[in-house]
Image: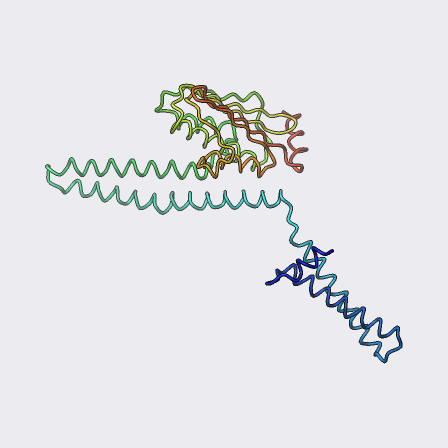
Length: 297
């Protein structure tokens, strides 16, 4: 009680403290009017009723305001994921539609220019055209990474296979995608999370690990979806707080899993590769649907 009163008299008051202080004043005013009325002091009954009504209204407002700020963690996580994916989709459209069209127009202009330049400048114009081709391909690749449209049409397994084929096509890495169960009926948020985590893990492997072999395994279990990613690269020291220690990719993977109520375990040692295990539980509303779909297939 003492702590609550102390928090009320702090200055400047917060909104919560202001509501408490207003409620306290109404209570004191109502009690004072009631005491004066009981002691037979001259006090209009209407004033007492008015104070009681004001107290009731303030109390109702106080209770409703407390309930309105109690957001459910799962609702916040779902909303955050939705905002992130919407922003990725917007950036993907801008890259594909706006920047892609500008680069295509520049390429056409370079070809027009090439036909009218003298012979000694043809080589430079060809180099410019090749550079524009490469830039356009990079923009399309980034657009596809930001918005993997094939997830909706092909599903998780086929999308991962297509991504691994394209990403590791010109590398010496030997890879394998192990998926023993059918990945149908999985909620979109789980599908996107598994795809994004694999994307980030493969990117980190290519940048830092110098690995020769990669294994990606998907398992559909009664308690949820399990994603295993292993490589035989040079390894690293996982940070206890990846975001604070500069491991942004690992921090992003961890945040995605935690937002869905799951866990992420990273095991790595120098010279012994990296093992990533993500466990994402079924959402309560999707558990029954996923179980039925599994029985049907």
